[in-house]
Length: 240
Image (cartoon, rainbow, N blue to C red; front, top):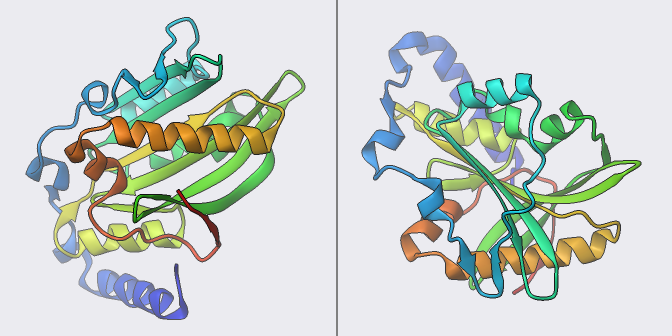
């Protein structure tokens, strides 16, 4: 949670970066210091009661947006999962070696309106828990007359779950001051359901099942290895 102290540190880092200029410009891709990431291997094809439903894909971007995504990200992955009771959840992942380059393009608040589906319920944040590990989740709803899609997502920069805005900038600056260009991943989970509360509960169950089905190494990538650092609008926790 960002406090006045964090804001002061952010201001100080920005001033230092401005004064020192290019001498502190990062040159090393953090991704090059870690094993390569392959999204299809990272996210299991089936776990718990869920398996891939090849008949339905998440919302496809327009040609212009698709080109922007391809230029901004190293790899993307889109799948729909179904469980025996017929509930379906869509999973969309975007990963980039350079999180500075076009990270906002895949942000639901931007990409859904670009597809003609405006945001009907603005973004709020809740904190899930996977065991003892906190996972801040952003919630919002995109809707048009024919589609209501509640959305849950989180973003990882380097080895830390963060949020867009000041927290994201502060985490990025902390890497830059050490000479690193951090990588970034946005994990989005959504479903078509007019019952928003039910949809978010289904998504919570899906996320927990997915994390339980991942290898320990994969979980470290999507949950980070350091405590989450997010904005100051964190809402009450949802325990698991």
